[in-house]
Length: 429
Image 1 (tube, rainbow, N blue to C red):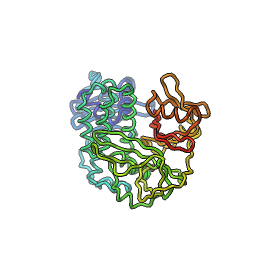
Image 2: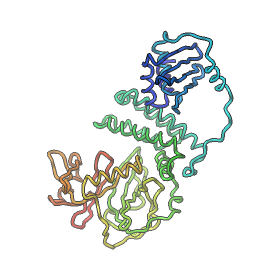
Image 3: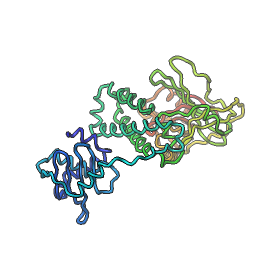
Image 4: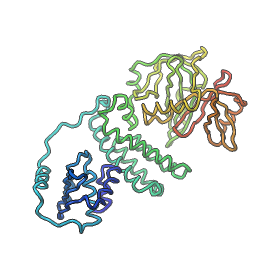
């Protein structure tokens, strides 16, 4: 066994880190014995508490009397590290104690047949075979993320582009299509200035997803739906439309366009007058094809909007709609950036993978500070929009130094203005 094989055995990076400390706790190892097949030891964590640790080197099985649910635990991994670093400390013995023999006999017994883990109620739309494949993929994802962190982001940056594609393909094979897409897109931003921040944020999101997906059946139904969708399992439109929606007067508040891998997308945001609910209409087209329906910013609809099941419903479909000439009277935004931060924190608590957070901010003044454009709220707080772009000059012109309302998307690090509301006019930026 070498260090790479040992690292691959670790259930997660935290256990691996603790194992290093255990391996250097010299005086706590009261007895270490073994041979080419078995390794066993006593590890003292307190004056009256001794853990019995055993490792089957041939079959890579691990036993320990500690309470950890992880296998191998930090004590078993620490014992293996000790073997690699100081094998002279291990006394060769071919006469294992009774407790080792008993453990070995238990391991040799055939496992009792059990029913496969039931698919959580909210994920019945996933076939059992696909669900099993996804769970296996999640285990592989966790190990890949641990290796990425262990090696360091600098090493990750130097990996060839096809290495990202190769692992992304493995995620797709495991029926985790959305996860594969996110990994495949990494190579596209590795040369940007903030690449390390974006990569670290992605690693955090994927690790949280993997940890959560492994305990899917214990999560609330709506969060189960969120995770399943995040993994790449989309609910069919006719199933969504079969649900009851919210009938309201909706304002088309803003939209943005983009392209990923030859697929053009459009995010269109609606705001309900009575419900004060944001709804996201997400559309995709290939190549130069046109979007089926046009949504002019500032127009209003009388519509029934149906939301995809989620922990914080956001993406939606129109069940039925008609254009409206009625004046929209529900434009109430955040009064300050502090209140925006609190709103975003509440949204993250409901859905850690929220992505883009729609927000309307009232009474802000766009100003230029050197080469940087900022929004100034009534409490003298400011929010940077980065270097001026075309939309920035529109903001400055519409404001003229006076307070206006601005709608946009917040991703946790940057605010992207999409619309300005000044003197009753809704203007796309």
